[in-house]
Length: 261
Ligand SMILES: C[S@@+](CC[C@H](N)C(=O)[O-])C[C@H]1O[C@@H](n2cnc3c(N)ncnc32)[C@H](O)[C@@H]1O
Image (tube, rainbow, N blue to C red; front, side, top):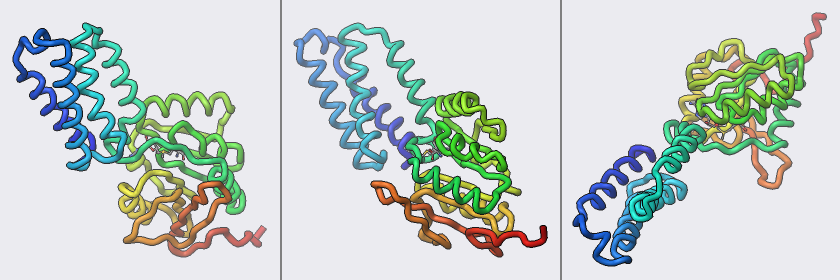
């Protein structure tokens, strides 16, 4: 079950249990309502970890929600701050739930390796698929001979990315708000992605359908066991992370110099 759907189901059940409690419970004893909310919170936590609501983050979210409900009811706290916080979290992490890709950022080593690859290939068009707050785009746009494009589906990272590109004066760079799978990869020489294992088989298939001969799909860390990469580039960072490279048929990692000019 997808984490968002599992969480919705668990929280609906938690709400139903709390709602079904006798109306006078809050006044029975000071500890009764918190004890009930804690019990429901523990149940939600166990359910989240058992039915696959995913990582510990989702387990924590499931445990916290009944307690937030308790705070609102017992202490008569206005619910608006919780609603605003939830909407803000959705604007940052919404795609993490929908596409099963969390927001974490490429390190400097990955960004630098990609820029060196761009320079070596004289790549005319480079894409960051799921560009987050623009770490890769800002670095890549420093190479003025390349055009750089990005797609991001989460609102807050998208706006931060736009602001960073504007501050960096990146005139060779463009960012689109929306699903990366809607982006046309024809003409893209290097497509970079730092996603998760979940979308990789679909992304590799898309790259193979659309990207030109000899172009590169570069994925930070994540691959697909069904379609192993052609090259692996180790990064000199503390995490010993790596870039996986799929070379579209008929090419090599670094193009041979053009001797016709
Ligand atoms: C792990 S972050 C990487 C950000 C950036 N590429 C970097 O390397 O620093 C993945 C980003 O992809 C975005 N994302 C995931 N699936 C997406 C999709 N289908 N369309 C657009 N963006 C997506 C997420 O919102 C997140 O910001």
